[in-house]
Length: 218
Figure (cartoon, rainbow, N blue to C red):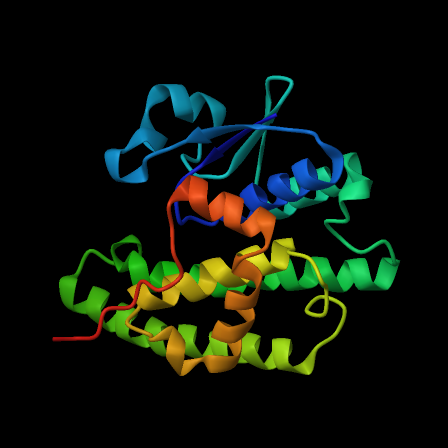
């Protein structure tokens, strides 16, 4: 298996998933670094793997698989001993629902913060899009903080999970939106408690990323 990933991107989620698989089963993978800032995701070679020019891509026996939910589902079915998703049908559905919420709600909201040019070519409109999205993104992170505080099977695991990897990524992105992670103390404390766990730590070290990207305004 090969994982095409970019440091700090949402590909961190399957990156951690594959480290969990390695830890639990001994099955390794080959990490393939894609440098987004150098446009490596838009090269003909990469577009032949994923015409959307996005990460992550999991290549298995020469065949590419895209989209976080699909990759998570595949890895869970292929490596059931890794425990990436719950075995109870209801709990599994809830776990996938939360991953979908991350992927189809929080993630696109941040895209409006980080890439407002995708939604308008007017500079003034871009600024308004970004400003509005920052408030929306913070509100969603507060909802995530509330979900974690409420507990439940997803957030009471004693080992690192796909959900932890996504929570780390989303909170890390908050700094780029001008949101101080310290202003979300419950979420920050939870994420920090997972960062030292082997799968998370291994992926963070390979990607050379840290949690706090926030820089106070001068």
